[in-house]
Image (tube, rainbow, N blue to C red; front, side, top):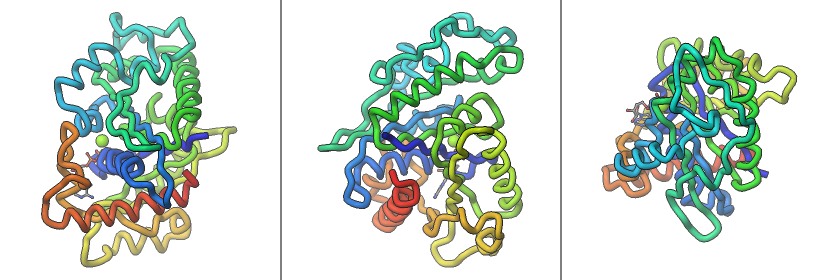
Length: 287
Ligand SMILES: Nc1ncnc2c1ncn2[C@@H]1O[C@H](COP(=O)(O)OP(=O)(O)O)[C@@H](O)[C@H]1O
Ligand SMILES: [Mg+2]
């Protein structure tokens, strides 16, 4: 049974997509803790940055045209997408996982699949207030259920807003990684996320939060990180490893420029850092 890990923070630009893409890649390409894994990464952000990180534009637009995106999980048909009249799907069955995902890497006993996103998801985000979203929630849940049978670990890259997307993602997740760039106001964002995680999963088992300090200095620990680690509400949820600031984490595009194939200065150090973060998360989540 696969483990579902959402990457979420209500703040933008804290590295959600960077973390999701690199964790997905590393947990497929390296047998962390000696275990090869079948991995799925779902782009659940209308900005589709994660899709762009892994796919060349031509390949991406072909998949989008063929409706091989997360939108198909929520809705059968998008010809009448209208932000003011959200079409409620008549069909409560999502597509089969194998019909919508795209294979990125294959190794013996391990692979990485991607379910891309699309800007058209915006119509759902805009229209949800006046629509009955229960059928979409049901479709998402059924889809994730099939994913859990097919993969060892499923990562979901979320957009920074309270929405149908963040709600469905949390309700179907076992763990939430919260990337935090230690800077002013970071502590407020964490408090908000902790409350949001609790409020969105009433009656269900709450996903376990993991605070991942991102883009940290290679030479010292920031006062903000020290403060958050010292806060009794957060200390138990802080990952020991931090993802450091390396150019080699900032350049993936069209499937190229990832840490594992980067020739940048310090890319070996960046890769070692990523393996440590990935291994710790696999340990903490039991994935
Ligand atoms: N650990 C890191 N080292 C270097 N650059 C990073 C790191 N994490 C994120 N970035 C850069 O910060 C910017 C925002 O990251 P991104 O993953 O798009 O954030 P989000 O998805 O939260 O909006 C991007 O330009 C990304 O390349
Ligand atoms: Mg993002």
